[in-house]
Image (cartoon, rainbow, N blue to C red; front, side, top):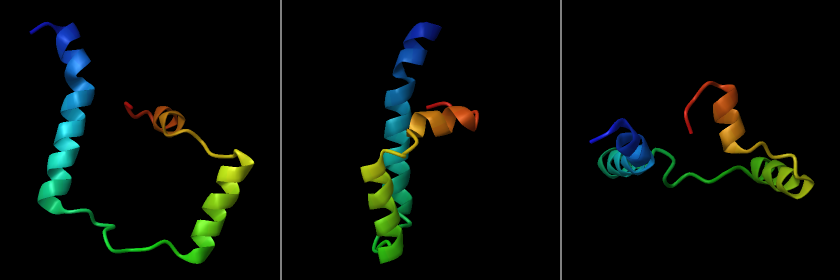
Length: 65
């Protein structure tokens, strides 16, 4: 396999690993609900358009997305 082929497969491999980890360990947030105040803040940000894309957050933190 070439480096380009491996690079092309990285997102798929990452997704499969994440799914398997959730399957094995479970979702730690399962069963929890957001508090009404947090829901209101999220709705307000969504409507205002002041959300930061996850890709930008990852890039700013030096993470691969």
